[in-house]
Image (tube, rainbow, N blue to C red; front, side, top):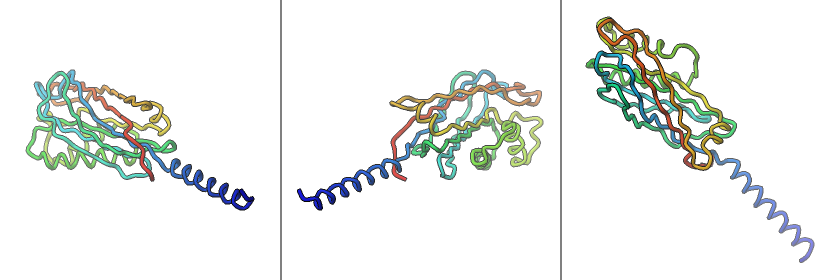
Length: 214
């Protein structure tokens, strides 16, 4: 082979591997985040709560995505939630933000309440703000409902946030492992006719799905 052909072959090989490396570097892992279930030790109401749940997630350089679900009547024990968001991209240098909330609401404005809940968790995950999220959510709901809740048991029973780096997330979900996160939370003081303070736990499950080119 002549020196000219050898040089051309070397340049072609370098170009091929350079392109392959560039494509590899563009691959970003995607994840599925699931609000799996809640466990209830004490409801906010005397007997059962009528619950609604919301989950909001923000991956690397993307706007938040949010989902909501009516859970229905919930008493002591474990209640499946099974709401999830898939194909959330999180690069090694990026991060994942998650915000969730569950509220007890037995009134007639369920559609309005779901809209308020969705907006609240979405704003929370986008700002990643500090502070008492449970109290802040209670105030938001009180303003939105425009009614005297002194004699009702409506109010949030769970409200939390989580932020995970891309590096930590990749390590915790390697080789098909699932990352499980459980948070227990005591609720706010409730009116006398209620059960005073709720006691709920929530479990989230995070799994790596695939990688996509960005």
